[in-house]
Image (cartoon, rainbow, N blue to C red; front, top):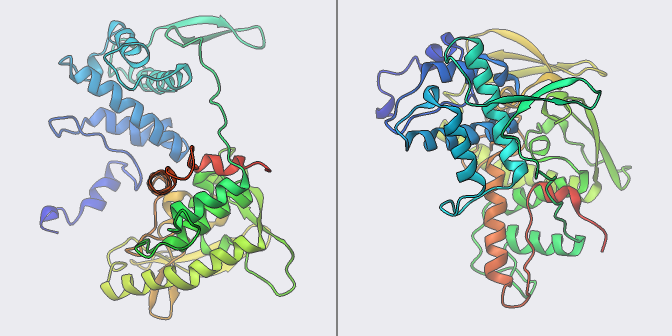
Length: 386
């Protein structure tokens, strides 16, 4: 690409300064990168947080930094008064059309407290804008909490669908059916089988978004002639919220849906990507064989001839996106869910798929029902019996 001329060694430069695939990089409004912030995001305890937590915290940082920029400041010049004014704007001010509740504010406050505690400890700022106070903890001892912590935080209400409403949401929003229950003639959803299989898998198994979105093909149960109604799979420790491996169960119907996707649209986009040479410049780790029964080990070789191995339960989301296997026409991703270009679909991309499905349900069903079905990846875990 012309825009990357002179940056052919970008990957090596990033490796030298500790920037890894998936690490967030923040740009100021004048398109500058703050060296200290980059060090925090890539080389502190922040780097070890779960991918979804890092994404949420990064969003919180951007909001506060934009607020400061409007005051002619950068993040290192923030004061306690700035934080209190930000709290007012974020939670109460009529000037903000997108105010948030206590729980959401507390999440952002935790993100800021983590950043500024690190910055003070490493002497990048003199004082933190997040003032702390002592309170009694559950065990009776004193603990430090942010003074701006909201007391009105409450757990978010669990939204749910009946199985019947969920099925209609899938058919209309993801598979392109019309209000009459028949396929729409003008539907152009080229990855409908992928999207439907993913939503049904979350619904059937109770997986979280990142858990289901980061599956490899070798982790999905295969249909068997003697198989029962449900099939058993195993989630890797590093992709679960609890950081513990967990067994999941998926219905035979859903396992069949996933297999259908793998053999149809997934195979098609892989062939197109191979023909277009899209896998040629990727940092591929080609899995040569697998070993171990109780602790599955993937043995791989990269483009430089380096040989290594990774325990399946320890393969991070970023590493999983680099794992390939040798197919009939060349390397193929082990990552289960692929984009139309044949590249691994990032877990966060599913949010957009669900939003588009909700928009379609609203457009197609609003004239025939008062409340068209609405669904999020998290809601798939809370489908209840009709």
